[in-house]
Image (tube, rainbow, N blue to C red; front, side):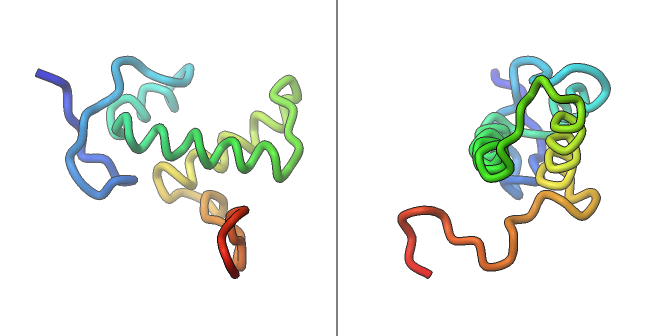
Length: 94
């Protein structure tokens, strides 16, 4: 039987991750609370964040910014995590 978590991203109980997807305490917290589907949604958002901000993961400041967005998106902490006001994904009408 698959491990389940009460995922705040999905708003329901869902299949949990197989292992922590990120190092350290933050990775453990993600593993304990975020579902596989919720993590996939974060990865989609991460792609947008990296492209929009032209982030380089070799830059420690970029990693700090990504972690802030991650905490905001996954756990609703801080001021980052939501889409910018007025943002329309490419291919959708305004």
